[in-house]
Figure 1 (tube, rainbow, N blue to C red):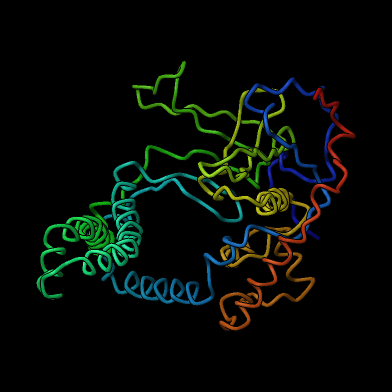
Figure 2 (cartoon, rainbow, N blue to C red; figure 1 turned 30 degrees about the vertical axis):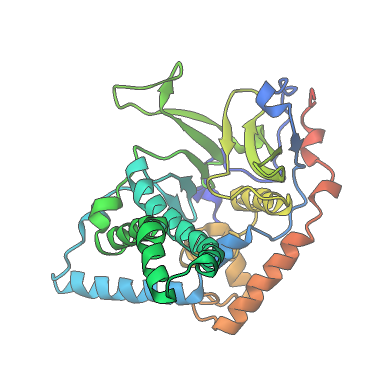
Length: 354
């Protein structure tokens, strides 16, 4: 029998939808190019990046580091690095999924490395036909023309992005204390244990609060609806972004920083299924690599694993070939998702204005 005392009385269960007030009219940001997604009838899916980002080899590496850490602690030889003592305000376990972004100072080095790398290879490809064209009209020897073209043109065209890439990469790889810094605080939190959704408020009347306080806008999960926002990018391609919007108050979560906008709506639909499955305490945690070490701590999940005989090291002991197949299977399941054909179970409990 599952011990439900660990969960708060407000914990969410898909069978426990209460009758609610009619929904408020959506604000202008939710009226344009927005599609509300149905509640319920979820599949066991998630964005593929959630699986790819935690490979079994990564889990084994983390396990090895933890063993070494425990051994050092036992022998009183452990000395944490400075950034290990920082609170990065991110958490993803059996209790809550709390999301935060690194500060602008950290993103500066990330962009310096990433953009420099992309621009370098882009300009390298562009420079090849330019070089061939210049050589074909030069009267000097090839080596002399090449030297002149490089010094006058390619040195800065390729040199500047290469320098940016090199400096950014060196800082990220060898100087974590310089770039890896915590942000002011989290952005939002989905709490499985309490069934509540929280958006952290850093502004007061549009201005950032100067006293360092962080407001919290909190509401039950069942009072939110998921929307896909579709808008064109600079090339005119439709880009889809998942939003979670409160039905009665101005509380909105934009998942674009977590799930990159794309032309296909399926990843956003898979994200909505994942969120519902994660928050629903009547069902086990989504069976993903990052949750394997926490499954025994969640009562519903622990009972499910005991009943089904799930291998507690299912992910960490998985070989690379099997993991690749699992990732491919998730790709297919996300592509086949039937979200838009499902009935909205919440419509039985809410009278939608729109």
